Image (cartoon, rainbow, N blue to C red; front, top):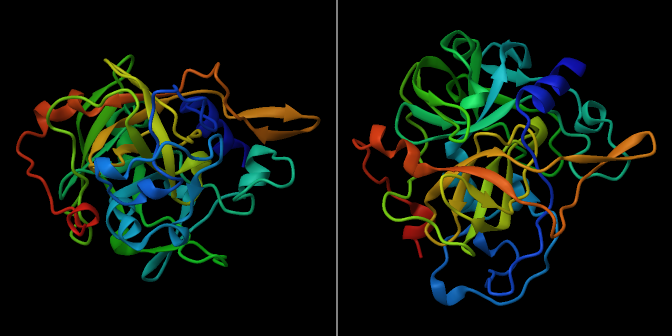
Length: 315
């Protein structure tokens, strides 16, 4: 338990907390309406702000989990996966034990097994944060696991099929620092899910609404709506509900469904309350979560075509 906690909080020091106070000029979608594509006419001027927007898969609209969320993945160590005939049992300490939480936190009983997050951009390429996979040797000791999620409210066990677990073929390119990303080729083609589409032209604007899908604190996948862009440049700052191990998560535009960037850094995750810890809530002093804009990797993905986007195309 302690080893996993150190890996998540030190090796991949990322992030975050609940949203910050938004600029008065920002128009927001209604709470969680960003879980399907929207057109500009659907923007609304008011919503509850400062709320934890993280959802399990069973709580989110079906198309979102069937396409966008299914294209995201968890990075795990071998010891987190136990092979049992035709499936892997995923093992990890509960969130409350691993993080030393005070009573009453959401997801407290769920297991923590991921150390980073990532997403599929072609049939055999995934993207994550550069600090998540530091060398080819480290990559080869990492498992890339799809479908680590809660599919029902009473789920007790987390198990994935053999077809959901991949190994590293090679690191195609990697950078760390002010620009932080890694593009990794898997050991085989992924055939049972649709890759995410990327922003290929222009840049995201301050105030645009975004959502995040990944594995905060190593938990089963969470879908977090209700963030927005605070600033943009060589690094985007966004108010998305993110925590350690969300590193590598895709930040998606809630209107277009395209990936705007890769989550890589952020605010502190916890505050102490006596002998236990509580999840931190951001206020107007928070800078936001750091996101590597997707344009940094477009030159090595020029061969990719847009994939069908059933979440948006169905509207």
